[in-house]
Image (cartoon, rainbow, N blue to C red; front, side):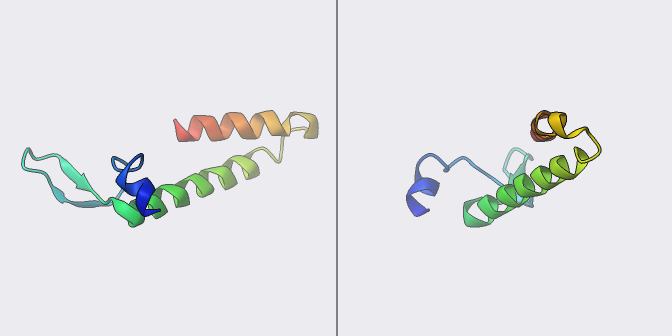
Length: 74
């Protein structure tokens, strides 16, 4: 995890604002807490997409779930 956060994940942030940058832009939480926040949101959106497709006829549920998840993550 340290290697990921030091390389590919170095620019990844969460949603919690930890303060402001010198230019006035918000400074978001990073590191492990940012990873946890992002993953929690992904799981939440996946559950919402799954539950939202239950009223759809069974053969179409998979496509509806994927569509709902993609729209939510965008």
